[in-house]
Image 1 (cartoon, rainbow, N blue to C red):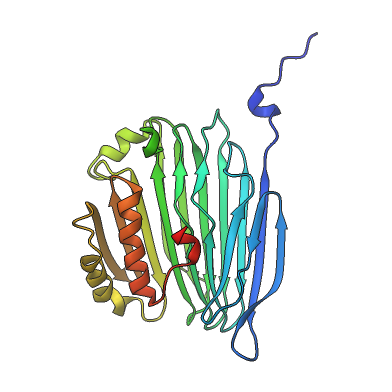
Image 2 (cartoon, rainbow, N blue to C red):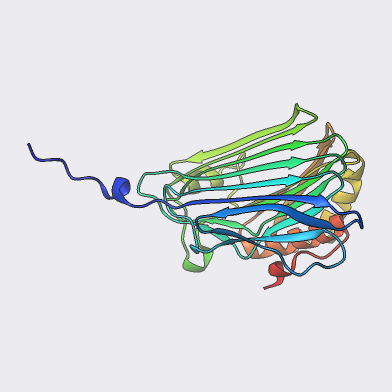
Length: 282
């Protein structure tokens, strides 16, 4: 009996990338790395220390993520530590011929730790299939700021995301109790789904800014003032903010990533009271 040919999707080598970083506050007050592990194409670069939070930059040496790849990022912040995690460039999720790409982020913040997760946008090619998860365990007095932007199709090529799948799952826990749970799922004809007013009203770029901290709810008026001052209206970017249960959530929708990115950068800088990481300017 002849063996059946192995489909290309099964025979193709998959990429598995993993980064895990642990940081701690030193006696002088600066945050420094205490442990770092890297494997596969994922790397972490640590720019020269400057005043303020420690900065770490994620680098994918593969230049993108193909179908069936799996990438994981873990960060552990010791008591009182202060860290900014960002990426060197936008992440690209390539077209899939069946297998699902996985991106998993797990964050742990001890007492009085502060983490700003500020990657550049993720671009889904037509036909991409992505399952992404964010989990966080944070102490009651820790501060977590998350920003994520998604782009559906390559606008420069006139690409529309007509096929593919996305599952984006967020689970955040404070002191062991579930504080925030959100799952966003799209599949099949993505462009038709995004055209629905109840989903995105035709937007091809979207972003979420989530702030979890003891004073999060008290900053709602500030967030709305920043939206008004960011030029969202003139940039044709829709934005809104709400706060509850120790959370502040801000969402943005735009026809293109450029104007949305500009509005988001203005909001982030005003909200955090400091410039964005240098890689955002390149």
